[in-house]
Image 1 (cartoon, rainbow, N blue to C red):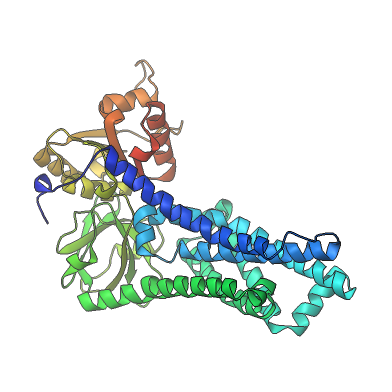
Image 2 (cartoon, rainbow, N blue to C red):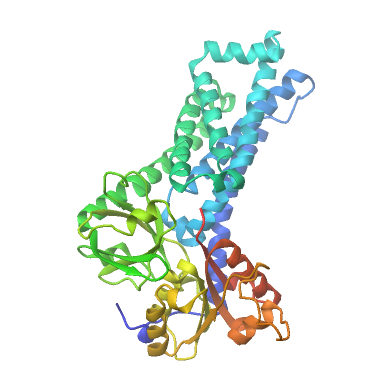
Length: 466
């Protein structure tokens, strides 16, 4: 690992504008993917001659199919791990966008099914239910699409926040594998019955190329590349060290592990190759600056993470990643404030170790319930002392008010959170802010930062939630 003091890191307004332009380009490509089919529909006269119910239902059927297909491709591209997209948006933001598209996509697919049923009922003189039943009984590709719609409904339903609270990560992961089956089931009827697919060869080629592009990226970056690179490097657990606060540090070693290209603050999806755990990966941030090994510090949350506390050295693993933009690559200011709570200290500790900085440039705020039970505290204290970072340990039980800080002692004059934050980090307004901890705690920090005028582009958030 190179000395952080000698690293060359570009900062300033010009870098910030460049980062925003890249984001605009990627988002523009996503919007274009949706609008190109709509424009092709308009150019083909899709919005003309809508004088009767048959024409209206036909237009609604065609347009909803085109927009839904476009959104479906974007929806999958967001989780296909396409590197040049992920490096700009970050996997967490892409995952959030993927979730938000779920409901609109489902509504469009339902509209497409309803419009197709009414369109056929008007043409053939059948009732709506009879028309749908006839289509599903006589055309296998339409039956497959209906099954795919049902699977998509299950996936979207389990993505609702209330449902996610009741599901374990493992159950949620298994259910969401159904989304790929839903997509595969829906494709054949597009090429058999899609009016615009059949009448416009260029549009058919456009969608076919998009399908192939996303599928190729999905297969390579989500399935094959992690296996190929991990096996080539011979990745396995080399050390397991219990830490405070029911956490364990797991060190992964292998041949030329630096080729994975990890940065401090990023995370990997860790797949442990044991009989019980091989089939699903779990996301963990690196907890030390990546070098010839990669280390994760894993909290015991009672699910698969409990089994990881006793993993044996020598166990083979597969790493998918690195992912995330919670790294110095997004930094544009000289001063940096790092805020951590709970196991969120893992990437913050790695950043504190690796950031290019002079003494006094970095402030670390570590929220702990009990100093004697704080994960990686000794390492954080050592790093801050060696590098001249300012460390603030904020101790005390969780505040019932939802504040990211503990309640103030009785008798002291009450101060708003944002005032207390400025006391902890006087340069916060002029800093890049990195926050990692439970989602509610992180939201409270972010609210205080907004009150003191820190722009959103200087707030970098890594939430431990799925």
